[in-house]
Length: 192
Image (cartoon, helix red, strand yellow):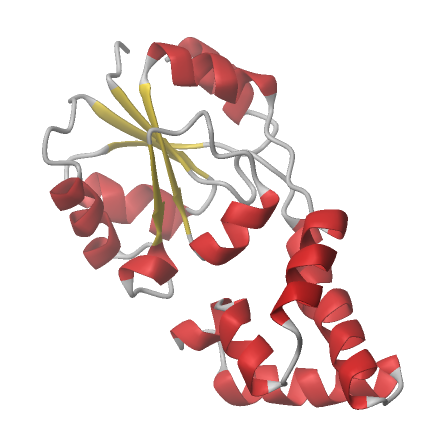
């Protein structure tokens, strides 16, 4: 295909992001329980109620810094626990593709989470929908990526696992989009 810029989605495409579930539903309640001297089960009930009250359509839902402040959790304790317990492994093909192409990461995960959990060295740029101000990778997100990549190298290919956010939206703006899963993304990266 001869791509110059290759964008990849993280969760479901490059990696299994189930460790992020443990961040929200195990680690954060444990830190809350320790801070407020309640049982972990009670903390899980409290946090689940608070998570539902905010909801995934608001950017705060995706930002640990919001919850750390809201729940009076120690930021240092949070950072130490995340670094110790939450790790997302990238396939080796990502590192090879990063040497051949301008490889960028396009994801819904907030940079404050990514910076603690993923080796970002293969990527020339990282675009988080949350940090751009969008809860999802909608057309406004993709337009911001194109605008930020002032000297974007075309053709521009995006690999992702969501039909709407990784395929339809970027394709509507001229990005060659391909559906991929964490099982097919490594071979697609090799083929590009």
